[in-house]
Image (tube, rainbow, N blue to C red):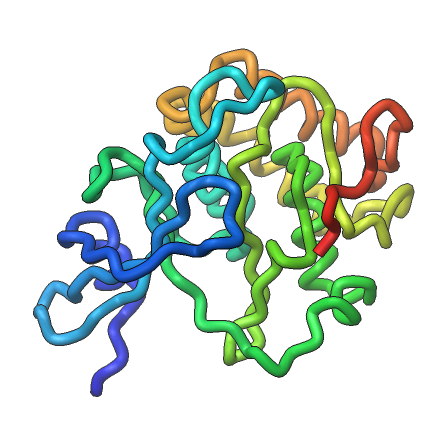
Length: 240
């Protein structure tokens, strides 16, 4: 079987009919496993579909919906030049509009718990990304190592709040200096504010978009990774 090219996978996930075959029972909101057919109709592409209709209201995230935040996180990852979030789009499905994300086949034998506490540069990139999007739920289980040992981050529905609420298991770099490369990535993000804002305003509020750029500017000015602020739990529960 021929391997599908990334563009073909993206187009299929964004447009092809979704077929649902199961549900992730551990998820707190509706997370449905399914497939779409490739554009040639010869191969199935696995996906996760999170319909907005299946979301539980959250008192601390009253605006918008989790699905849109998932898509916003994907777009921000791309603008930063990272490859952290699997392709994610907002589209219609069997249960209405929702986030549809490419499924990642993980390496079941990989010890993510031990790995998550190392200083691997792939984790450092995710720690910086989480600081940018103000991720309130970076659990170990929200890290995925695929079969080719590419690291991904998922489940960003509770991110991008306008108030600082960073909560993560990746505090290894707290207070450490950003590299010149990291600063340059953040500066490029600021330089692209106009197109980034235009793409995000369909997904999150104007206040949240403004807060995003304030966070990035603050990271550049401070020149260090953030530290726990003591006003908000530093680690999500459960952490795994």
